[in-house]
Image 1 (cartoon, rainbow over the protein chains, first blue to last red):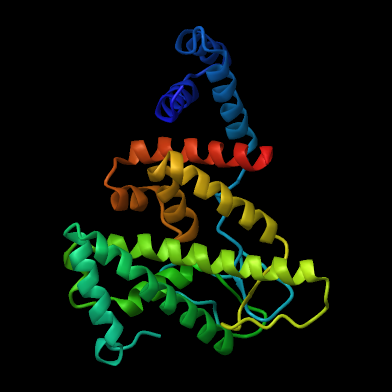
Image 2 (tube, helix red, strand yellow):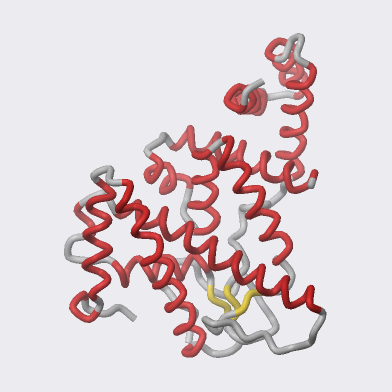
Length: 83
Length: 195
C-alpha cells in the first residue's frame, strides 16, 4: 500500500458512522491486504487515543520564571501578555 | 509595539520577498526563512527583557507580532504573498523551540547543575522538551511521505493558524485540510507512540 492509498482509506474509514460500517468498509478496501489493514487500524486507534495532541499550542517561551502556564498569554494577533 | 516601516528596513525586504514568493519564486521563499527567524528570536529576547518575570510568551503571539513588525502595512493587505510569511514563520518557530529543547536536553544529559544561559536569553519549559524533540523527528519523517500534511502541522501547531487559514496558505479546500489534519495527527501520534 502506498502512502496516498493509506491516507485515503484512513479518511474514508474515519468518515463511517459506526464501527460496523467502518469494519465493512475496511473488509472491502483492504481485501487481501492484511498489512494494509493493520496499518490503517493502527492509525485509527492512534487517532482515537490522540486526545488533544497537537490541538493545544506548543509550550510558551518562558520569561524567566520556573512556572510555565501555557494558557496565561493570549494568542490573539499582535497582543502581548497583559501588563 | 509597532514601528514605522522607515525604522525597520527589513520590512521592505520582507515585503519584496513575499511579493516574489507570491508569484511562485521558490528562492524568495527560501530567503524569507532566515529573516523571519532572526526577527522572531530578537522579538522573543526583547519581550524577555520587558515583560514581568511571571509572564509566559506564546509562540503564536510572537509569530503574529513578527508579522505586524516585518510587513509593510500600507501594502500588505492587497495581495496573497503574506501566506508565505506564515510558512516561513512556522518553520522558524519550530526551529527556535526545537533548538532550545535540544539545548536543554544536552545540559540535562551533562548532569551538571550549571546555569542555563541561552544566547537569546529565553528558555522553555522542562517538561515538553522530550515531546518536542520526538515530534520534530516524527515531523521530518511525515514530510518525506506526506509533505503537505507536514506543512499543515507546522502552520497549525507552530504558527498558530486555524484550519481555514492553513488551507489558504496551502491552496487546498478547508475540507481537504480537515482530512489532512486528522490523518497527520493520527500518523504522528502513532509514530511517536511506537518509537
